[in-house]
Image (cartoon, rainbow, N blue to C red; front, side, top):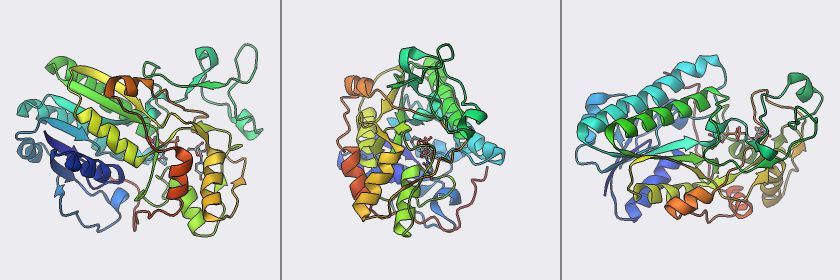
Length: 348
Ligand code: UD1
């Protein structure tokens, strides 16, 4: 198939490009090379064209003859402060809207969208008890778990299914929800097919080095490389699902090859949940120290637990992650990281 891949120079996009090419697809790869993601003055890779997804004319030219668009381009991270809002809205929300309109002009009817587990906000808790934002006084007292509002008992987490409500808690999450909503509406009005891949915590070689917009695996890995202990927030017992970038690429290939109409959201996860403390310990052990420090510090906007059910992706795409997080993290402890020299906040 002929595939338009956006965000092709990124940490995830580059792996997706390789996977699609290896499977025999004809890939038109584009990227806008945002300094916040690639560093200042980064060179466009040879097999990638410099195109902004907000540029309708440029899209009209690259979309000729395209069967499927695989849309990875986005401003990532959680957002540091309110000043980041225009960059998320512009690159992610508007970029997706311009892309969908161009796909319609080109008669392209299939989209694979890079989404995220952040669309859910908090994960799911025992008995689907509704939880809100944790109270500042609880966090300050070291009470990090959610409690049942009636019985005050600590709530245990359950895997989140795709039909859980979307409750975005960060600027980035708000933009991912917007992308999904635009794509779902586009699928309905044009009779097209969208597969939204809700990535869980992605890690692997070539992940950008720690910046205020990096995921925790890169932050821990960078600290260890500098001979410093990983600083674990809360009590380290918060649960996530760490999925290797090679599995993310495999899920994208399966989604590109999955023809359907309508909107299908899928969790893309390893299916082997792990606590943040265990992630820090696995990385530290692989590098021979220093041991992580459980700081009790916290970020007010963080969710406590977010763990996926990977069943639907297996049922619909036949996708199962291959890399066990403990093996993948041990390898990641020494994997090269991407330098992002001078990367500042994203610009709209
Ligand atoms: C992360 C990404 C999000 C992405 C999602 C799924 C960031 C900032 N977040 O969300 O964009 O969509 O995965 O791929 O890129 N922590 C520490 N020490 C630190 C930093 C963080 O213990 O130095 C803890 C946090 O308190 C949190 C956990 O690690 O409990 C995960 O944090 P992080 O990776 O930043 O964000 P996620 O919410 O999991």
